[in-house]
Amino acid sequence: MTKKVLSIAITLPILLGIGLFGMLYTQHISESYQLKVRQVETLAREGDMEGAQKLLTEVAVGWEKRLTLMQLWICHSDTDNVGTQLRGLQVGLTIGDRPSIFLSSANLIEALRHLHHRDDLSISNIL
Image 1 (cartoon, one colour):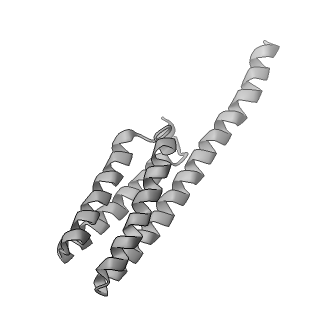
Image 2 (tube, one colour):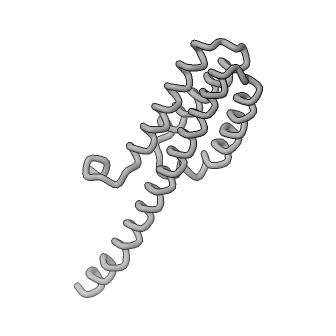
């Protein structure tokens, strides 16, 4: 009985720590990329498509670097959705289609928000 209590006392804080780390990391990634996507949208509104494309390329490279780690604890369909929306925004910027740019940026921001909220430590996510 003592071994069970001891194993729970050791394992529970470790699991909570890992969960908290994952939640905070995902929150940071989500919020920082949402901010950058809004900056891309602002540059596109101002007509600086080259600057918007450059910033979006930085976002895409950063996303690809972090994707493998994030997929350890996040549903692949959620991360795939972010990637799909990111590519849609890249296409919109490449062809210069303003409605497509703004629709894709809104969809990308929503996918990033969804990514964060699905990963929060909450009763609904645990159950």
